[in-house]
Structure formats: structure tokens, C-alpha cells
Length: 388
Image (tube, rainbow, N blue to C red):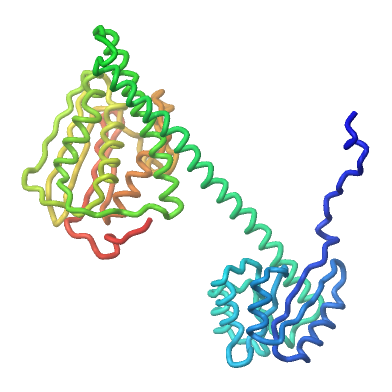
């Protein structure tokens, strides 16, 4: 038996037994005495009060981070509590601050909240019960926020790890399959080439799903930035379809035709993101169109906007499903036994809307589906610098 088993175990610290450390920043000693008396009357958990008698002293102590909560008077020397609140946050203070004032002023209250104050109290109306409640509620809210922020950090870490751990081996597999198909390691039979090509396509599909997951996360977190350029939309449509998706339609003996307007002007857009939209929409059309069916991609220019449509002869989409079609994780994949994340259409609409365009669906059961997106020929300054 280990010696450590005979040693006393550390008991978890009960938060209710730990004193709450409070700092009052107020240049009036009488106010400190009053606040100290009020705090001494608080029943229950102990509160320890420290006092800073000036703006500069208060800021210095706040930067030390030794207190759980700060009570800041509105009037401080030549500056005020709002200045201190703002400067403390700029210096990295994350602990909650409550602003105290001698009289109620809605404008000060609103300004304090905007700057980051957690609460606002009028001095003449503060007693032990009111102060204890304000401190307790503020600290409970802070605790909840900390849990949410930690959860957010874990989520970001998970997504970063997921995309790295999945995308890296998938990219490596790309290279291996391409080397095999180049017959660098020896000649391949027709059946071997067929199998490797199928593995390569599955690999690309898996990469696209991982990429969609990462893109959806970036949109939700406001981390997606558009990189605008003068885009030849017809060229992008053609290259995306024939280089990335033509083989999929060929395997299903589908007719994939392009009717592109030669007079389409250059469109200000993010090429990578618009390619993602085209890929998602055409891939969906190929997936849901039966063997021997047809898919038509059409582009034209009207009313200062490029219009691209992808029409298929698939099963169509019920009206009730169209209401939620563009929501995250909404997918018809399970109904038709396809693999998918349900993020493709959600991401596509987000991208098009970020370009000040529109993505809609026109579909009826048994008559196929048509997805149409528009891109304006002139982007506003807001769209050019958009951060989603």
C-alpha cells in the first residue's frame, strides 16, 4: 500500500466560506466609513472591504487583480468613475465593477452599462440587503459568463483541432491517390484505376464536409472575412464543374450542361467563397438527381446583377421542407440515404447574402429543383470590408 494513502486528503474549498474581497474607489473618506458600516451589517457570507482614496490608487490596485468586485464612485477628483471603468477594462480588468453615484441619472446609468459596468447603485438608497444582493447577483452572473467563455474557448479549440487533425491526413491521402493514378509506382489495370478514382472522389467529398464545418463555425463566430476581386463568374462556374464535379455526373450517366451568358461582366466577389457556393449547389444537384437525369447550369445578367441558376430533374422538395432548407444542419440526406452535414445550403446562403445577393429555391415534388443566386455588379463599401 502506498504511503500517500495514509495522508489526509485536501478538502474542497466551500465557496460560501470564502470571503468576498471588495474594493471601494471613492475620494470621500466619509463614504468609505458609511460603506464599511453597511458591509459589516451584511448577513451570511463575509465581505472584506478595502479602500482606494483616489483615481490613480484605484487603478493601480485594480490592475493587481486581488479583488472579486469593485465599487467605483462616479465623482473622482478631476476625472470620474466612467473614466476609471473604461481605463481599467482597457488594462485588462475582467472582474465586475459596480458604479456608485450620489443621485440617479439615467444617462450615466446607460453610459456605464455601455462601457462595461455590471450594475449601477444610488448611494442614498443602499442598505446592507441591497448591496449584498447587488454583489451576489453580479458575481453569479460573472460565474455564468466565465463558464460560457470557457465553453467558447473549448469549442474553438475543438474546431481548430478537428479541422487540423482531419484535413491534414485527407490532404496526404489526396497526394497518395494522385501518385498512384500517375502510375509512378507501376502500371494500373482499368479496374484498379476505377477503384482509386472512386476513393479519390470520396476523399474530396470528406474534405468538403470538414471544410463546410469549419466555414459554418467561422460564420457563426463572426470570423469570416471576404476578399473581394473582379471575378469572371462564368470561368469560375466552368472550372468548378468540370474539374471538381464532372466525374460525379458522369458516373451517374447524368447530362450536365452549361448555358453561360458571354456578356456577363466581371463581378466583385470572393472567388474562393463563390466557388464553395457553386460546388455545394451543383454537388447537391448531382446527389439528388437520379441516374440518367439532367442538370442545367445557366447564367445571365439583368438589372445590374449576375444571376446563376442550377436546375435538376431530381425528386423535388416539399413546400414544408423549403421553410427550413437553409437552416444549419437541415438536410434531406437521410431521407434519400445520402451522406451530408446539412451545412452546405446554410453556408451558401450566408456567403451570397454577405455579397448583398440572394439565394432562393424553386421546387415542386416530382418536378425537380432550381436553386438561383444573384450577385450585384457593384458592391458597397460595407460589403467590400465585410466581416461576417
